[in-house]
Length: 305
Ligand SMILES: Nc1ncnc2c1ncn2[C@@H]1O[C@H](COP(=O)(O)OP(=O)(O)OP(=O)(O)O)[C@@H](O)[C@H]1O
Figure 1 (cartoon, rainbow, N blue to C red):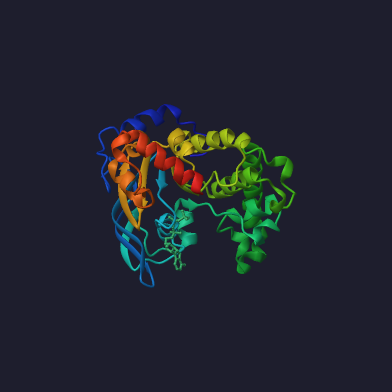
Figure 2: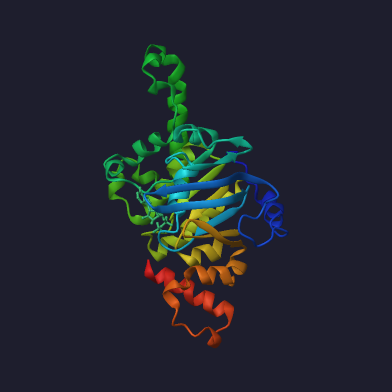
């Protein structure tokens, strides 16, 4: 996949969504992920309760919803970082719901993590090397066979160097990750996830803590992931980003998928409005048209973050 600029191929992929109904759980023409009856309970709280979900291959899908809707929990489940109470899902047609996280990543489905304190104390380059799972040199019994893993080590370093140049972090490679700005951290999270050359990259709030000057550059990087043939799924509260770059939007509320569709359709969808209306009983709906209400509610959610 590396190096292939698939911009020409992107257009037919986007076109494939035209006939998909704007319905929760809608079937897609070429899904990379298909999940059924996925549930996760914390005590008495059903954090995730998804009947059916499909993620279309080769496009950018946004996962939105109010705080506590279950978005992160669903991310954790799909990528093997948490275990469901029930449910099954496939990646590229292969069941993956019982596969541990590191193997899910090797198969090509990777999620970003916000940099933790521990990773902040590693250099940018060390963070990149951590992103490359399954190096032979990690296995103690391979140590005597240095000739076998030295080549791989070199490849990892070359790949990390290339990605750091692409994300304009090469000048920072020896710096502590903790010294990076919010936007640079987001770029590092993305670059690190790309170390395993994933088919599906799942971004957790890529715009959180990013200053406005870096936002455009970040948006460009996310689009470039799609344009080189990857599938992108991201959780985000920044509605400008959702509007700007997503090809498809899935809305969660109280653990369930309550709406799906193109960004324009979703922002004017009554179910989306209803999902957020708990805090808006006083709004006089008769005074506003549907799209205006959606716009207002979305803005309030965004401002509330
Ligand atoms: N480990 C946990 N233990 C107990 N409750 C949890 C745990 N993780 C999540 N929850 C609860 O599950 C619900 C869903 O949380 P989740 O973080 O998935 O929502 P979210 O949509 O990602 O929210 P946000 O947009 O605020 O990040 C919330 O009510 C949350 O408090």
